[in-house]
Amino acid sequence: MIALDVFMDACFAAVAAIGFGAISDPPMRAFPRIALLAAVGHSLRFSLMNYAGIDIATASLFAAIVIGMGSLWLGRGIRCPMTALYIPALLPMVPGIYAYKAVFSLFMFMQSLNDPGQGEEFMNSFFLNATVSLSVIIMLAAGATLPIFIFKRRAFSLTRRRPDKQQQ
Amino acid sequence: MKTEHELVEILDFIAEYATYLLGSGVHTSRVIRNSQRIGVALGVDVQLSTFQKSTIMTVRDPDSGESMTRVVGIPPLPISFERNSDLSALSWDAFDDHLPLDEIRRRYVELISKPRIDPIFVLLCVGLANASFCRLFGGDWTAMCIVFTSTLVGFAVKQRMQAHGVNHFLIFIVASFMASMCASVALRFDCTSEVAMATSVLFLVPGVPLINGVIDIMEGHILIGFSRLINALLLIVCIAVGLSATLLMVKDSLL
Image (tube, rainbow over all chains, first blue to last red; front, side):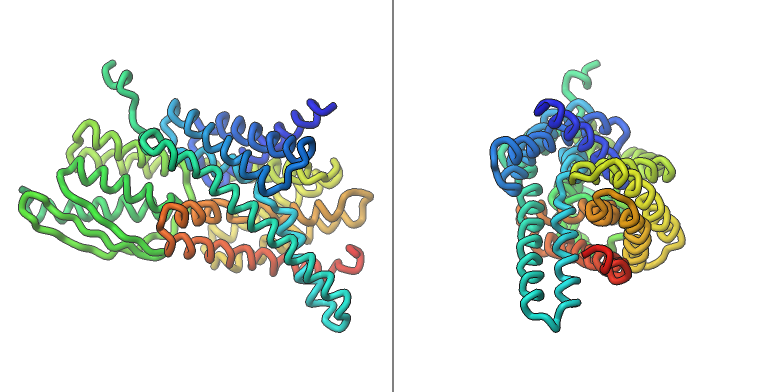
């Protein structure tokens, strides 16, 4: 049952990544790899959160590092820079529901100005949700960028033609 | 040694190339690296510093010591990872094969005139993506169908308004209002209506500038990184405004 849950999560993440990626016009040759990266990353986060009890920000960091490493490895074959692969793959992990709850709490806070008790509750919930969404976004970008700093040379020459192809 | 005319031509090309990349959502350090790589291929030294709306760049001929500077505006282009990949590859080709300027320019024009992905295809993709996003957040099948439909409406509105060149803040407000309004239909059904409402506007979230901004800040281009983040934040505020308009109408049935 766990395997099925993780598999379904991976599939939906892959579809989400392809769809949101399509807005930013990635090269057609990159779609399968974006889907693969998103599926691996999101299902990793899903498992870490649900079966290992890790919080969402830390789990996102690990997933983002895996996606970043994967894009370094997969980008070579199709001459794509890392960002063209990992940004679409990260998009399904953007914490939308927390952002929505933050907006909703702020909105409800403004509607309950006459009731301080209720207003405080909404303000609490606003800060909680805004903090989670902000830290997850920073963790996502930072984690995926980490491999660039570690493997500078390789990361900067992904779009270079391979030496063996040049000789042909 | 380069003649003044040659230097001007090189500067003009690199200015066009770098601003095109910056306009299509490439993070700053890559733009600088690519431009400098082309500069090396053409035998000049290139330095550039960039802001949100304009770039200052200097091209220097190391043999004669002559240099030239230009301030160039950055055109507002749609984000494109395909252009990012292709133009990065072009800079490596220029570097490895020592291509002359005419050849680089010819390939550049060829690459930027490639057709983009079909808008209808993108529309369907985004609909499906948002529906699966709804699923990831724990929505059920009814909610997914509603999100799919409302995303189609919202994104189509966005595409049409973009084609007419409407101000992009306005586009985000209207699209977010339309999408969430359609998704509020979910309140009438027995389903996870809150998830449906929440995910219906998520296709608008400017994920690429957000992530690019953090990358820029981490790589030391803090000013432009913050400019990107603030730009993205403004768009998110616009999404919130559109969403609030819907909430104002339906809040009684939400609580």
